[in-house]
Image (cartoon, rainbow, N blue to C red):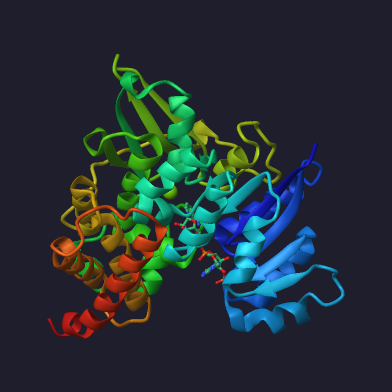
Length: 391
Ligand code: NDP
Ligand code: MG
């Protein structure tokens, strides 16, 4: 029986890897709706290639361009929030949630409310409103398959065992492009240098987050919500080869790890297969002899202060992760635009978390509240940027 798959963020890095797998396994999957952000031509191209049932662009102004690009294909389309929600509401066995950033919260949450099986790449959903997402997944009978490679690894290692058997959960970090750089050199790094990820091929925002190790901080928060594990039992180790993605340390001293070469199609295929193992054409085999060694280092929170800030936000809980994520999105965009230096990212995020600590304490009760905090912090962060430059 074929399964219908809807992809939110179909034109992105995860979206394209997903499209590759859907094409390879066309006998198993039918493509339902595809959602993109602004790029009408790219969305139309993916929709045509996958013979999608519906295409929706979030940008309301992109409707005519999308319709024109799809002319003659017979694929209906729409633009704006209503069209995105229509895409989510269409029947689907699996919804891949791979919009980037806080923009992913609403459509991902809408899929959960419909009780869908959600393959979750959009980590911001859990960082910004983890309590509400996990509560509502349970309430509406939705299933979440973690697509982030570290969390897919943890889920495989855990293999349904209770948390009482677990001592700690460890996720790995490649260390990013600045792993061996001095603080001074990192301070002067350009966006191109920060985006040059040593092992993974990903979207721009997550590349910068990997260089600052904020991505690992976001992933600790993500793991806390996904597995219900306390912050004190979560840890990070730097592993430059990116072959081990996550490890469960059991209470008897044994450790279970998942290994794979860094290719997002591995965790994506595990999610799409709902646990079945799908063949990946052109997938590279893991040759341990050729690799020779797997190495590990501690994470340096002096050179990578974003990891320290994220750990503190996780420990503080409440609205701190929501605030941190919003400030980080503004800071990363400002860094990419050349408006602030690399350490300006951590600087802005820390200022925002400190500023809002007294204003928003409780974790957002729902997605609307999370998005309201997100908007407030973005506005504050944007006006704090010139001040930061002057500092
Ligand atoms: P990309 O930037 O490559 O792609 C983002 C996608 O989201 C694009 O399809 C984009 O469309 C779409 N989009 C942007 N804004 C909106 C919006 N407002 N409404 C609807 N769609 C929108 O990101 P990635 O694929 O790298 O990452 C996606 C998510 O997956 C992120 O949350 C990331 O943290 C997570 N993730 C990514 C990994 C990776 O390897 N890339 C690994 C693990 C997690 P358009 O192109 O038109 O703007
Ligand atoms: Mg990851």
